[in-house]
Image 1 (cartoon, rainbow, N blue to C red):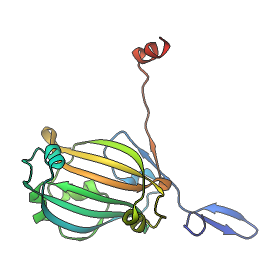
Image 2 (tube, helix red, strand yellow; image 1 turned 90 degrees about the vertical axis):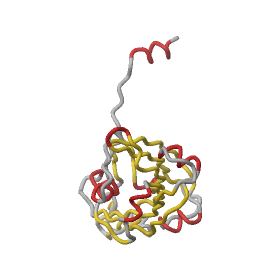
Image 3 (cartoon, rainbow, N blue to C red; image 1 turned 180 degrees about the horizontal axis):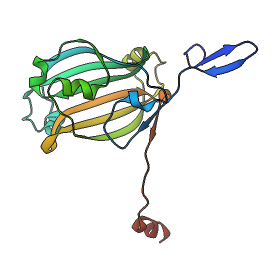
Image 4 (cartoon, rainbow, N blue to C red; image 1 turned 120 degrees about the horizontal axis):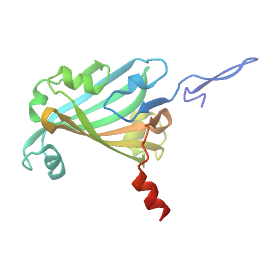
Length: 192
């Protein structure tokens, strides 16, 4: 843990947590920066922007004709200088003309909005996967380490899809939190 920067040892004083885990509220679309007790510096690095023919599943989600051009972007997010997640996203083709590789401050949602794509809602699916060689190298973790995979679809006004994204996040730096209601019909079903 000390080698990975999570704890610091001081002789005569003890061992102290250096990096805290983000407690990410999973009830709205928002960046990871507001998920820490003390707001960290969040920085994105847009690695590449290209135009590609939309693969069938991407075209279906973005409501495009299969093979129609779309933008494909790759970026990483760093929290206080440490790699936090790696991302691959498909967006409307028009965004490829205004995005250029480089550093951006804050979260990806704000970045999209600053470039004309308003985000009003999102659908997320989360699953645990093992980091492949590229993901492990990008996140500074051993290959095969558990990471959280977020499959994200963002929508603008009128329920128009504006992004299909795949975010691989270090599972050791993120906890998802949500308050869930319990419905009476569910408890009756469980009792029968």
